[in-house]
Image (cartoon, rainbow, N blue to C red):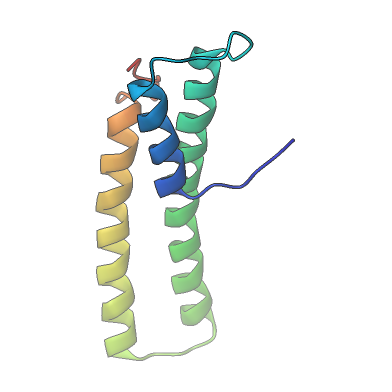
Amino acid sequence: MEYILNQAEAEFILTEINNSKIVPFHVNLERLHTKLKKGIKNDTNDQTRKIDQLVSEIEANGYLNIKLSEALAMAKLEIGSETVKMRDKYFDSEGNERKK
């Protein structure tokens, strides 16, 4: 079974799991944590890649609009900053998962 979650949903589930005192016996919490954290990491990496791809496409098409380029550059910086914060929350500088 596969479901697609956004970052907010994945973080919500992680928080609820951490706050819950009841755990079904057949659920491996450590494995679930790892899956959710890896999904968040992959999503943050994907966001950065997508904005780079968008900028490259616009430039490749010869569309030179200074305001658009500046807006995309600012958006990229903001997304990059949020991406780093999100990754650092769950992973160390070597990419190893932080345990709780």
